[in-house]
Image (tube, helix red, strand yellow):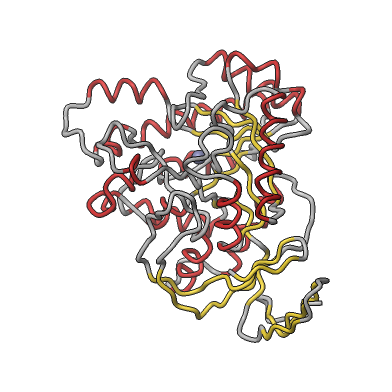
Length: 402
Ligand SMILES: [Zn+2]
């Protein structure tokens, strides 16, 4: 048995944690704080078909290192997860990859909404966590850009009591703005082309569909003050609308293009500095419910290409919790905010079963990010020095030192 002695909860209660194990070990945890293990509601672990970027062997290791024991994975793989058969095949692949590394990471999957396969949705309702709708193109070609199909998805979801998660960027507006853009085509153009109006147009539309059909709506990667204003109004109306932000939108802004170049290209794009403060206050006010890493690895070669060729997305699952703990030390978030953001609200919104995975963190540990477990081998956070790190992640009674 492993006994972890003397770890504290944030309320100051002291616990010994006993783990049934063939090892006999006592871990002194007097300087460690117990938090619920992180639930990451937004990852792209790239299986099947894009495993040269990431897979569940490396993804699971990155998750554990970040104090995370449960992930919700997105359907924009190759092929996309938009039929019951493809869903079953994806699960088999994931289970075999996790088995290889001996990490039984908890996971659930989003089903991809696709115009040609909407009739598949009711049949998978008990096997997925929700339906993912790309209102604007991102990696892959899953996109719902016509009103008729959007109405169909929201109405089917409401009828089947399923949640709809939206990538809220308006595809028509993106195409129009791309055509009319006359500025320099550098990475910075990304934030001009996919501007805030691109996001708010889609967010407003998704909220109106939630109002019309009563659909539970989860708005992914909220990045701007304007989206927050719309979500706040929807919540005041008591609509079943929930909001997620990401570490890159909290900790980077458009200044990052100068240093990170293509590594700063994400969808929705990075915004100006002022939006970051508004995201933090929206978390404190409960307008933003969750944080998702939107862990979306690409190879360094792909990210080094010129704007237009460089794919959108960054890895993030490993450093999300340390970034948040560092933000606690900087006075931006309380530990209660962090627990709510990284596990409590996700558990409620996605109606997850109870389990007792925890992460033990050393709030005072200072370390510089120097390597990653992710297959892509890079991180936009490389070189950052953060205060507050996971030390042990406990998943289904297994203790992993991070
Ligand atoms: Zn994503």
